[in-house]
Image (tube, rainbow, N blue to C red; front, top):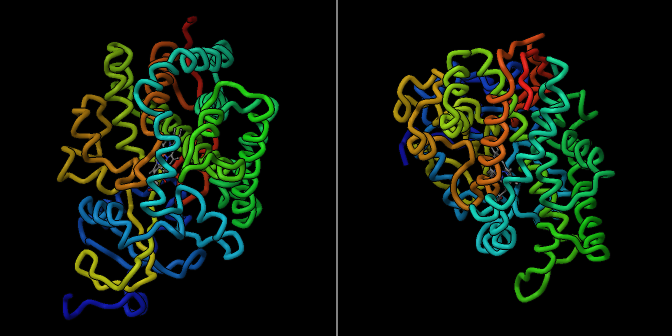
Length: 419
Ligand code: HEM
């Protein structure tokens, strides 16, 4: 431990800095230039916050982020990955869900649904996904304009995950509303307050439990059906346990993909040379997907909580301190990416995948990563084939959030090609 190291409370008192994770700073999405400055100047910083836990440590460097995310014994997930503490009355229930668990329990639960996103399952799912992408674009292309976020970017991952989980069509809108309320609870257009977000999370779990019950009465082919037939600790899942999984899959899969697709459209409009490259060579779609994921990672940060007093990035921190890993920071670190502030779909894919932290790291590493990549590959490929000369009809409107970087409205016009 360095002699000058401060404890978290001293750091909070003496720190000259801040506002990073602040709604105003994030009004136009992740402030990338500011983040570059912070990464260049600091390994770890203390930031006070007045809406969540009082304060937290910020980490910017890949090795420190990996250390935290890969050491669940030192940094627990039991208090969740977002900044806001759950109200005590709801915390115990949340701690029964995958995203709040630590190994070894976490490993057992995760194994129950892991197989559903392996490459063979993804290949089997692809024709269904292409058909959905075609339907969604067919509905908007003849108009020559659309509101891309809600008509395309949200529709696609939502309908894919509904098909995978066996959600009935009459419930589509209800589940989408709850997901928006939960993940965009800081935006008054989606939720009255944070409390409404926590309640939406509980309601999603209840819906998942009801979906399980429905599958028991009306068996049908879906991940839900398979999960109900699997066993953990020698017994099969209850409806309530499945409901928690459902919540994780829906929340994990929808807003993230929708934001990445919307950012893809915005970056292609800002960089028409890159769109031209993609349209000229369909093989570039994989590079395009990885570059959007690197350049515009939708999940801003992951929070963990220190399980003991320890040293982190040369700083003494205390048991119970919140540690926040800023995922977009390594994504634009010049140590890993040449000219990192340039959007370039021809970057080497293996290097991008190895060095970005868009999907996290360690045991909670995105469980749906294959589904995410597959969704983005299918939809960005179809967009490039059928949407020509896309242009903004209005400035995109960002959602008010410091956790999810994305838009709530993106009005575009384009020249369209028939299928
Ligand atoms: C662009 C799309 C996506 C991005 C950027 C993304 C990002 C992430 C990140 C950063 C985590 C780590 C959370 C943590 O460590 O606390 C995560 C976890 C997770 N993701 Fe994704 N995700 C995406 C798509 C998906 C999809 C399509 C699904 C489901 C079909 C999904 C399901 C999950 C689940 C269930 C977890 C929790 C895993 C665990 O706690 O063990 N994600 N995702």
